[in-house]
Length: 386
Image (cartoon, rainbow, N blue to C red):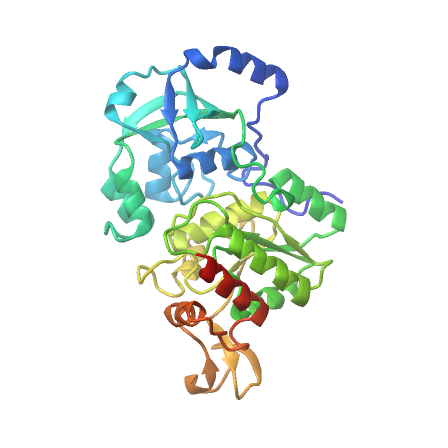
């Protein structure tokens, strides 16, 4: 059986150096100019190198960047909604020459990649904020990040030297080539991907299982890269996913893997971005729920659904599965959504995030109709330790 779906652009990118190339790089590394990476840039390098951001081979040059900002497409016409960029200061940029190799330094102080500098250029931060996030308010975490970036962007191909966090969640750290092979080995032709940065509650479980009725396998793919302050830490979330899958999901039809990407909180544009990433991992379908990748009140509840209408389905080549707001209905006697439940909201068990956090901090289990008690107990313990 061939792979069920091609990577975005048709080729799965690999920017990892072999042993001989690494030896050559190490011999000249000390002589190269160096740029320090922030956490997002470092995770982007890994995502590029393993093919998760296929067809990208490096950080965007000006034309590619502007095409994404203005048209939501790469220069070759492929859909792409999030700019992948490397920033630095004017002073640092002035010392760099086009065509030069630059050592990219990770959070630990070690070189993690080489950039072959193709272009350096100034950019309009306010325009990027408005085009990507729909706001220039610094309260938005994506805008806040952008404000702190350097004023010059460096474009060019990258070559991976090492993965600094390669042992984090090692058992679940599947590269796209590995997840694709795993799906193939299982004989799955239809695979649905699920993006999350939160513990899975009953509403998530419901839509995952609804989707699982229509495909051979579910790829539960939580993001474990940089998130905003206040989000549940990745290690706690992983424990929640594991206990949930062990007790409530069919073991032969679900794969848990981690996504070492950073959150952008770009709402609808990030929904497209997340779908493309899961396509590169081998998913044929992708779940898009209410307020996907949203934050605060910056996006409408279903903006992440509507944005898919702006693309030809053949260009995206992954099937989105749209789900409404879901909840437990006392009259229905089970999980439902506004698409399926005829009863008034008084019959629905739905709690705000603020209310749930308050209950957990007080050591109270939310109703079992909202959250599995095993998951809630893990969250309560983590808050005690925190």
